[in-house]
View 1 (tube, rainbow, N blue to C red):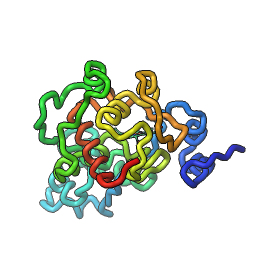
View 2: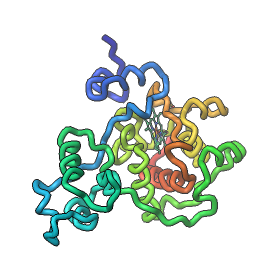
View 3: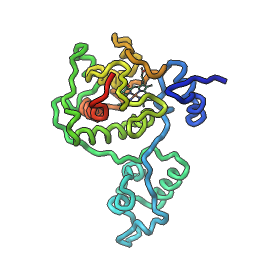
View 4: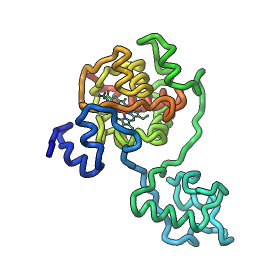
Length: 245
Ligand code: HEC
């Protein structure tokens, strides 16, 4: 039986909660995205279908569903895509939430695109930009940007590993002022885009290790837009404004 202490608690405890991830963390190999635990925001599903149907026409529209469950990712719940939450979908949602398999509870939102190159693929951005040259176009002190960044962070599933508020979970906290590779915009953008392994291969190294685990690549397939990532980084920075290593 192996035990390894990672920020005060033992991997064995994590391994029980998230079977399979604990050993992966300790082996210093990439944490599999597929294995990331679901840490969805809670959605309170009404006990009856009828109670949501405020127009009493036998159908629950998106508007009615959202009024009853403001936190619902309607698109994910509306599995047949007809714009209604029908009874089968309602029962399915209720069951998934009850048994903890609903992972898609955070509503996706379109954000204002105010910067040039917002839609650029973060991996392309990283590949083209000389080392050390990337700079966040957003100001972490802008509370709207920070709020959008937090929503993007949830939409991209970062919370599964780093916790809903960035306080850490099975992976290092993002709000404790300790920066594993340093806190520059350039480093953080590259780390999230490429993951630890490719970041290290491109000449960046840990200055303040918090964990033996590697972060998977998030840019490209998961985080597709550079602008989304800059907002996430602005939010992370906003939590660390006065603290740093
Ligand atoms: C599968 C788990 C996992 C997911 C998902 C994940 N990360 Fe990470 N993250 C890690 C690990 C592990 C590390 C530590 C990497 C290292 O030491 O090389 C890390 C490190 C970081 C750091 C550096 C923290 C510091 O203290 O310097 C940032 C910033 C970060 N992640 C942001 C994100 C963002 C943004 C997302 C979502 C787009 C995300 N992570 C998704 C596992 C994950």
